[in-house]
Length: 162
Image (cartoon, rainbow, N blue to C red; front, side, top):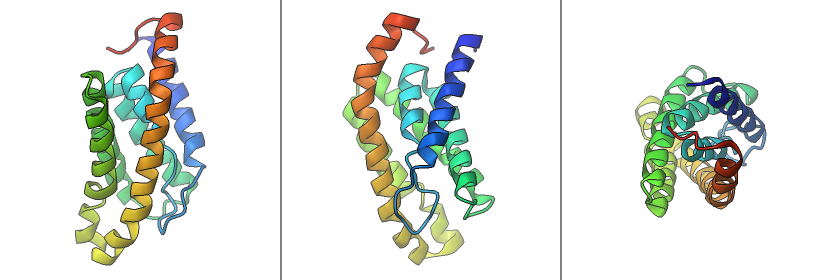
């Protein structure tokens, strides 16, 4: 990564931190608008950069929320990195709606699944509505911003998605 891309990566992590302060009402206080900057970064800067933004964005958002699930947030950060990377791969491959639907389903229903074993089915049932709602909000914000930002960004700063 060059210095320009690292600077943009830091900017998107910062946007994710700000989004992390905008909480979606849910039983888990770390559900926030922290992943849409990662989704935009995955398209603009590449899937790996988006994955980094997703992981760090979640960790900082959870930290601001008081780390309600303690070290389990590391697992969530890894999961977020994986699905943001997949979103970037699918979106760039011109399967935009597949990327959007896949992100919502994975984030809302699959990512909380390991917590069935760790915390039980009641936790999963309580967490899924808020997480899914946040996934929908984050993805729709990204879906609105990406087609507007990417052309302007590439015209002004060049193509950074590598």
